[in-house]
Amino acid sequence: MSCPLCQKRKGKRACPGKGELVCAHCCGTKRLVLVACPPDCTYLTGAHATAWEGRETEKRRDGRRLAPYVEGLSAGATRVFVITLAGLAVIRKQRPEATDTTLLAALAALRKTVETRIRGILYEHPPEDLRAMNLLQDLRSLYEPQDEDGRDISPADEELLAALTAIEGCLEEVRSEGLQPTAFLDLAVRLMGQPPTHKTGPSHRLIV
Image (cartoon, rainbow, N blue to C red):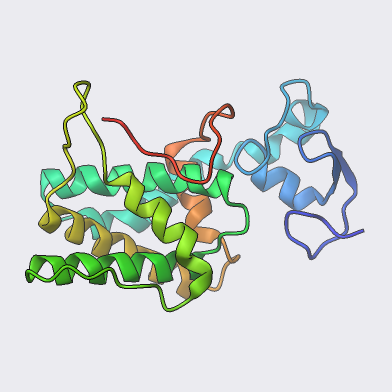
């Protein structure tokens, strides 16, 4: 039986988080990130724990990947950039079928919509890949925050456009590296942390 996480290698380790056999590589690189590992899992301690120690190194590498795209953003655009990454970490957990390819289609559609709106034209651009429709809706919901009094404090279109362009550029660079189909989504999870397990539903509005 192949590993359910990579669909490539043979599953050999009994994973209590997935309820299936996973390969050693995925166990070492995706534990606590893409798998909700129980604290008593034997692979989190002892001789098997060393594979997890490289996670901080991966985070630093991810930070270096993002740095060129964050430089030059205004404070407001940087805030939207971070909100987007946090939202993508939630989406990664709630939509396991999502890939970097469908995410790129959703981001491009939303960016075009914002560009059109800035020019004074209201038109919702659909994604070129129809599989990205749900992702597009998830992204839209991220930028409809409210304060404690229920007042709309959505970001300015100029800030949103700058953040979307930066995210899109970084995503395209990660995809060009030829890694796994969810490499950028996994990057968001590593940097922003695993979302709480009690939240449900395909879309999640961030209240700020």
